[in-house]
Length: 130
Image (cartoon, rainbow, N blue to C red; front, top):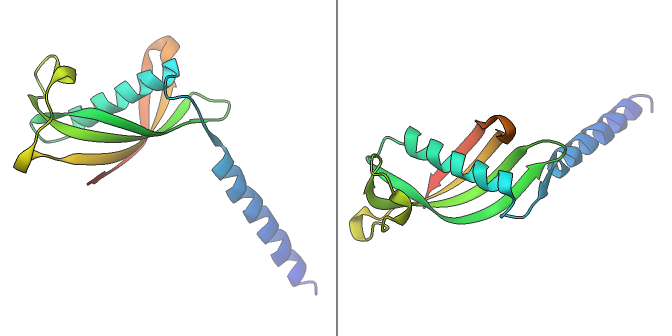
């Protein structure tokens, strides 16, 4: 009986911790100013870090979430390769690649934003080619 009590207590604590982690990010509006700036930062980081010569463009924002009581944003972005090179100035108006060069990527980014200092940092990123 005494061995079951610590096990039960441990399961309760673990379950509470898992539930808390899942609830620490909450859905937000995709047009939230600081979220939009964080998306732009994540896209610029992806293009700078990517070894390809062509830039990628944002197609769609899937999930938009914010960690409670912070300026940490979680975002799911669908990116598409453009015909423009990275050094081109206005790749936002650049057409998407079609045919054999077509490439889409789904990414999840977690960005810590300090917009009042114009500082953003990438905490985590995961991308998968579609």
